[in-house]
Length: 174
Length: 454
Ligand SMILES: Cc1cc2nc3c(=O)[nH]c(=O)nc-3n(C[C@H](O)[C@H](O)[C@H](O)COP(=O)(O)O)c2cc1C
Ligand code: SF4
Ligand code: FES
Image (cartoon, rainbow over all chains, first blue to last red; front, side):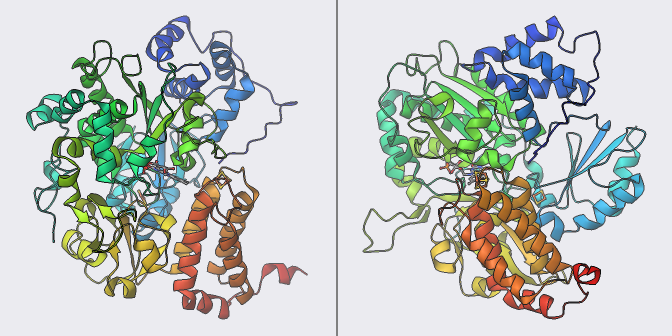
């Protein structure tokens, strides 16, 4: 779990003039979700998912706007955002490869699969390729143990991986 | 005796009744055609109290890991006071090696949904949240589709066929998690539902009294609720014919292992997958008849029999008759049945590396609230990394066991059960395979870098 301490005194926050959360976005978001929960803080996870879906990560300015929109403190939203592994506060690759490293996958050869990807892309787990195309993550059980070793490539499940077939799967992505 | 007809997998083709390849999404119409939502109608006709009584009579125990009787939990709710009351369905399924609920979610979501409404009816709950782990993308889409179908056919929403529950039209929403094992712990789940970090709460108050948004809340696992339609439709007695009852002469307050169970099998077997069988099936039968035995050239050494948090059973114990029921913990020195998803550990795999894998998992997933868990899991992981690298000492093994046994809600040093998982996983692996650890530390290869540097 994340214990991120931000060096807030010196950190430069990238800002842009155009808001990340447009009025149209806010309207449709509220229509879809607001009635579901008795308070607005409970909209935190849905809104973080929505922002990340749109921008592929969570820009700090977008978090500020979202917190204001929900009527909660920015620190509260940041607290939530940093706790969960799926949320990225830095840009990540166009494709994120989430390799499962839990027991069934390790037994079935996850180590060789990860090494093959790592060698091919020239990055270690947790890193993103210089061209911004791939991010490699090692994660815990993704609930597809029958097809171990397995990985998620963005939202697509890839099962029964070998060092060879996983590279083929990455090759066809553009 | 093998299971004659599937209960939970009635609509999901599974060997020996069907093949995995035939599995497909069962939509509302297909579900109704197969007799679906008849139990709901019966529940509506008989009333919520009758549903509650039937679930209590069935003695169905929670399928999420702890095995707590669902009917009893439902009975803890305070009387209605006019304010909202919630159901949270636990579809977080993040225990390593566990992949059973996802089959129900993606192929037969209406069985789960029917169980949900029946629970809402029995417990007088107006709003349900289906908390699904963030990584279940395809499953999320399937379940969203089923929810929409359910609203379209007046299972939920205005003018729902149940009428108002707790003075409100019943509602079901999906809530997506974002990658945190601890949100499977029931109060971590509630915090996450409320939009906060998933920090488990100190109990009491229990969720039945003050849960989601400080209101009475029932939390059940997906598979637990999926049993409810059958219980309501056919009665508790019919449901209890499956599984393992109480031996003769055992008093009725002693919990038993009634019903069928979903069992996952993964690791080097010929046919990994999720199967349904009677509780009480020997683990050996499960592996041989359903997993179709180990792959060529592989020999079994041990098993994680219910996710890693329950610990391991050895091949020798399995030969002596380990049965997959709620008494497995007492009989074979482990934490319990857990999720009943089995990982086969072959001879070629080092138990030191399995322990290291488990410890890394817990140290990564510890939410950080309790010192023994936060520091202890990390320390354990580092120790095991060192031992695996051939740089451990015999004293490290004592330390490892002492660390493991001191943490958890059962020793009373932590808030939640995550630390108990670390406790049991590490302790059972080290104790049952002490020779592997001893061997590793006695032939300590390298001289410690720390020593070299001084
Ligand atoms: C660390 C931890 C993780 C858990 N993860 C899950 C999970 O992913 N799914 C689940 O159903 N129960 C999980 N549980 C158990 C729940 O806390 C709770 O007991 C269960 O959801 C209750 O439902 P049941 O009685 O129907 O089994 C977890 C417990 C702990 C301590
Ligand atoms: S035991 Fe561990 S995971 Fe559970 S509340 Fe304490 S620190 Fe968090
Ligand atoms: S252990 Fe890898 S998907 Fe479950």
